[in-house]
Length: 341
Image (cartoon, rainbow, N blue to C red; front, side):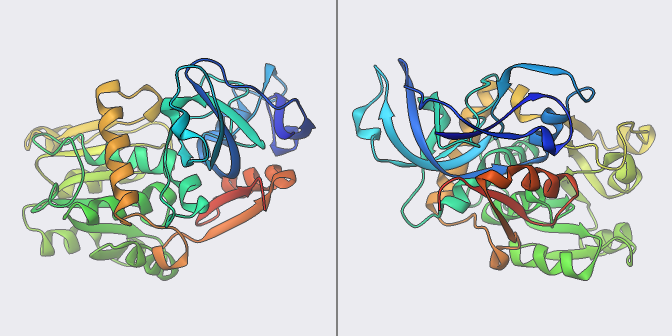
């Protein structure tokens, strides 16, 4: 079968198309015939490693997210899973040969979830890291809900920084589905249109508007939850618009890895600065998140494509290096590798 792998860290050109044997599932595992693989920033960051040229042994197949059809099951796995359409989460984490950038992937059965017939493989490949990260960000607020779903965020206000990104898009869609009033910030009218298609109630262009004043005019008490992609740049703004007992959930270090926190403005309203990485998040949260994202998919509450504010960029498997380069360069939308036509 065809697979993409890298045996040294570095630029996208370390990704190599190889032929390897089709793997067999062991006890508790399934084999998925991969149709689509999602590409996330975490994929290229892992590929780059600490410095270029470091050996990667065994070679790594990249791709945490994907979608396809279960075509074999191991001992102890329900035979009913055979032929099931599924989406995949954290395929490559801790598994060198588990990534989704290959024609067949063997994974623990718990790492696949049902993909309804009405949901495309493109959607399935776009769910994992972005949706789980968004869920974690939306459920860490003091006295806030631990689950998402209709009514869970009713009466609450959410600010999504960077609403045109993949995680931002997922956060807007999940917050909207859960009944929140959703603000988002963008850097251009074009990105504003995308965020609006995702379901944001109030879209603010931070290059042209006084975001804090606009938010306080609409929500005088402030926002309960901030989904933050660039804390180094936005810490002062975040502190200025947070409601009492609100939270800032920081899931990326865009704009800088060092953050200066406004202590007094954060202390007075008892707000929380929460850092988010799905790989090391508590297991007690993970089960809830998977349940809620699965429910959102079944309800048609999460979508992809231009109409959902998340343009898709497709690359064939042999051009996975170009797909990685597109994500690394900050392409707007979701990059998908077409493992099968």
